[in-house]
View 1 (cartoon, rainbow, N blue to C red):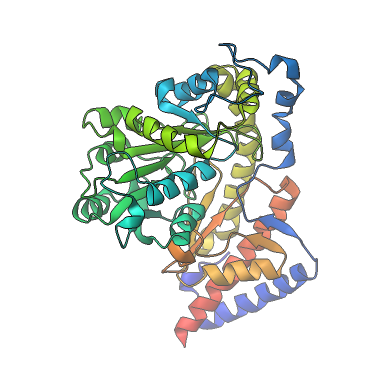
View 2 (cartoon, rainbow, N blue to C red):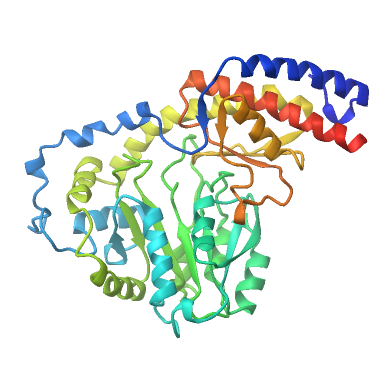
Length: 428
């Protein structure tokens, strides 16, 4: 395989012609493959099926005697708050159990801040004029869509393996009261798979925002999703905040969407006692409580933190080969071409690929035309616009191994075509 950066124009044209012939043969195959989202596949979901075999009559009463089939327990059953509080490293009184989706909790918390305000804030966000939010990039597209939905301006913050550029975060947050918060995926970030360093977490805790209602949306979606022997370590944000008295600044979220069932998990919200009390009062107008039967089902199945670790080892043993295969495919298909780089995460659900500037949208379109669906180019940036048009999120989890093999062959082929087209266009 050739180093595309050092080929002559004639050599590049010859290479492109050969690759285009291969591509036409692939198009004729009529593939229909999907790598667009980080979803568990059916085999992975089957790892949790025993949870549904519990005797339903064992899921009627919580340990303090509450009939979970009935109304009540707005914050959730105690044993669920205790288990997930232990996982997050917070007391159970700092936990609220939600429905099946942490995204729903984040959306709901955002709306409440806009309409009703947050603890300690002078008035609701929505009554303060133009609002801004900090967005580490590349990042989670659904975070950005929440801001876009409500007309909140997004400010991109570059990411490194240690986390967001904290000098920029500090500059914006501490000088501009219209900056109301920041989105964070602190462990195995979406899409790079980075874990924030202890220094970064402490820098967040030490922030002194200009806004009295600034909130860090700490989306700890992948905190138990390591798949290597060496799991990344993430400093507990609330422990870091204690030193600065800044616990009220943090909203933390997680769920079991990728622990058990994506469509039937439980979501978790953790915050300071002030924030929890404030949000429970707001929630009491909205609902009488979320699905306590499902909360109890999860606790009785997972049992303990050790039980969660044992269950997640099964998940890791299943996912690790998919990531190893994908990384090997990128290495064999693209390394010598010198047209891109990619992350090598220890956990999470994604690999972040950076090609030559100006190639991402073209590569994604070529893949789509050949029957391989990827996350849209630019999705990992606010407003769906990648300024350099180079980043593509690769999601290896959902395809079968056979489909993953074909998908990566097509991806590498399309990336090489897009790179050669771009290089040849620069010659003219």
